[in-house]
Length: 297
Image (cartoon, rainbow, N blue to C red; front, side, top):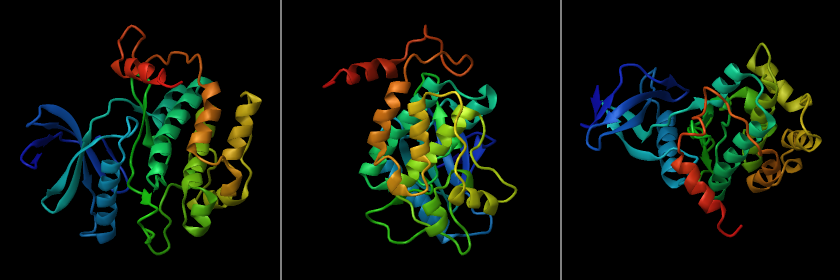
């Protein structure tokens, strides 16, 4: 299938989410690989989903950061909205943990710290992600991390309406903050709580809170203290406890502060065979980042 007279899509989707399916494709005009996200409308036109899809595109257009996918184009094909984005090679953190098991402390800290860098840029624009989870974090072969799927993100300074349906909370129960569950509200500290859930999972290899129903998981998120992470440095264990505090004000103040506290643990990263390019493969991205890192240090 060709859409927009230029994007030739693969036959089968790469993945599907709450709002749509993502296809690999080829931009015939610029001769490059792209990812195309189609809005899914299973029951016919849906104004709320369309508004959220348009909102996601506008957020990606505003958020210029190497840790977020680049939006190339936006349009409609046969009355279905689509986004054309940078095609990202890599593995989601969910698949990484599933195949590898608990991650070494340096890698868990490095992945979380890179996510913090993206959150810092987003929060500075008053953007809250609201759906951070292992499937929305991708580890690329050069070791960089991309934060994906801003479909539930809110622009706090401009948005008054809460995008919810009657009787439905938007988000993923296992990674939702207590304030999202109780009041349907999300701020910067809510994203930090979600990242704390992901960090806990990376270090243990298991989802933090599980249950037979969404309601059971909601109950645990609101009321149950998280189990401690065994075998990690005491300071990192304290940091995880802070991230998973039930009250937002008890968590680290912002993504910048969290990044600074994660940095000391993201050292001497071991190889992850099968997931990363070997050290002999040049990484232009890392080369560039090293030089930038020397500026005003």
